[in-house]
Length: 151
Image 1 (cartoon, rainbow, N blue to C red):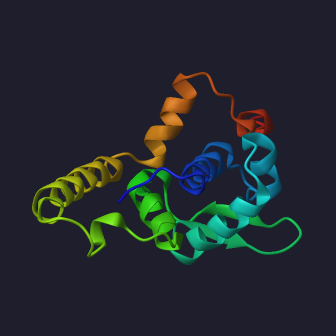
Image 2 (cartoon, rainbow, N blue to C red):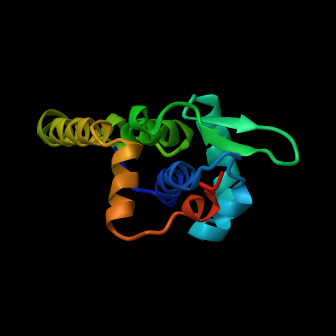
């Protein structure tokens, strides 16, 4: 069952932060925790899993950090949700063998359908879409402050 956990919200916010504030240098996790207020204990674990699953690319070294592994229009919120769900250890109540026949034949299939519909909707929302929402909401990007167009 799809739960909106802190870890899930932090993962989406972190990927959005990287996309929205990316400049020529990788975004360091410390910058994300400073801007978003995400506890470091949640962040590092999630960022590493997002790297393993190809959403982010990790850059090593003193000026290392994280970048998007693909264009932001090619990364969906649904993809991030699936990565975080793979990390969570709580059992899915839909798969629990205990319960009544009404639960197994009617209620659980309904929740499964709703969950599938929700994931399909999240698969249609890209990180680019969220960046555009942030810009239209007036959220400032630190990248805009660092870009120098002088020749």
